[in-house]
Amino acid sequence: MTDSLEKAVGTGPMVTLGGREWKVRPLTVGDYLAFKSYIKSTRIRDFSAGVGKDMDSVDRVAVLTNITNTTIGAFELTQESESPEGLVYMLWRTMIKTDPAIKLEDVPDLLTEVERDELKQLADSLTKADEGGDASPPVEGTDSGGTS
Image 1: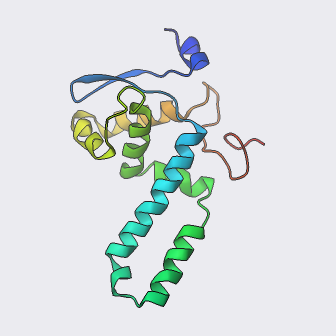
Image 2 (image 1 turned 135 degrees about the vertical axis):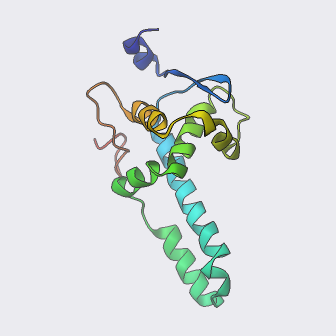
């Protein structure tokens, strides 16, 4: 399949991870929204397991409410998606099309053979809308990567 045809039908490259071929697809707005939810749930889990467990209930509720109600903007979403955990999450979102049963916690084991630069290059290719496209995640209140 040619690159332009792959882009037109919304398919991505084949990659080999853990000795298996995976068809990865371009990231969608839904993937970014799921990532926002993942970020918030991770923050809540980390807070609850860390300093939150030693706080009184009123303060704990206030902090959890703040975490829940805080908007994650495009800049923060981009930073989070470029972290090692973010790259794993975004790669997992593209891999579930090939294997809906794959779990997020399985992905790091598949990546042991992949060089960091290769993973970053793959992530960059998945976020590009087209060859000259905007690789930024969607902006709050818009339906696509920064457009209304």
